[in-house]
Image (cartoon, rainbow, N blue to C red):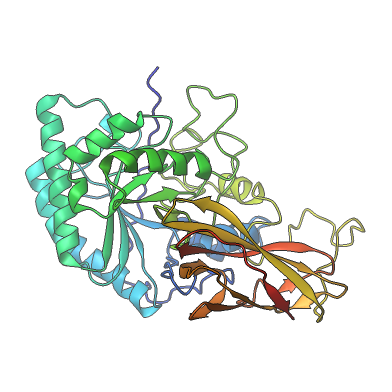
Length: 445
């Protein structure tokens, strides 16, 4: 059985007016010092709905968890006369906030094989001209996903497939030429759609050699771990120099289980997933991005692209109380509930820490650092250790880390500095060059 998903045709091409008034990023960081901050578009349907309905019991949850989270700005209309200015407005607003926007190019002819998100440019020649105008509005850093679902679909004949491949190659080259800081990824569906070898072959025919890599799981629900494994299988064929970005916008609970033919189309019980970041700490995965906008229907709960508050609220609430960020109080919960544990009180005290190796590929490895508070709660921590065999930290996340020679110093970044007495926390992670190592870590509060 061919397993497909379709996308909501998201009418999210933001106009120039009001874009510069971007809302602040969540207190939970979008990236470490080694990564790039991702832009929060204040004019998504979720953000605007939350702002316009402050007294609705769903508004705080939707605003905090969806409206204030970096997500994709989709360009879905064939508008050659205005696309340059629309792109320029978005990248200018993002630049004013010191962040990189997530942009989605979605206008190829016969888009979605005429399904829920059908449409697109009237011809491939017109599409390529439109892409050139898109590129003319581009500047600075951006994460760009090119034509979700186009490559994995099977509705094109041989001639049409050739036209698609030529158009995708043209798009990648135009976007990369327009801005040296733009990172461009060709979409290749999800891990339940094409076998890795087939996915790799289609990417190679569509110009992957000119792109930074490929995008997977857009608008789908496959777990981050499953998507990561799938990406690595594709990279084993197309080359390890091609990175992957994973759409984590709605994969917090994984796919519907047991699956059914409509598991791609607004399935119940799903949840928002990992917060977007350009510092995933996973080898070969350049970023977790919210490409699909949570709360905008796939075509089953409502018209494709329609914002449905109940859909958004259910996705946000299902992520649970530990989802990253400062969480709003759910008004349906009694604040006086004695079963609710109070937040840990700030304090100082002793602590211990250890490095845990989570991945090792020979020339490098990934480590997590676990910290345990002693008799008193921590309100900030600093760790030091010394490598034994010349290891070097090449990237890190959720930490202020420096290395001099073989000596490493790591400190909290504020939001992750508080640890309750006797509690352990996976505080941060890093990528290191050289052989894996677990030296003794000194912890001070």
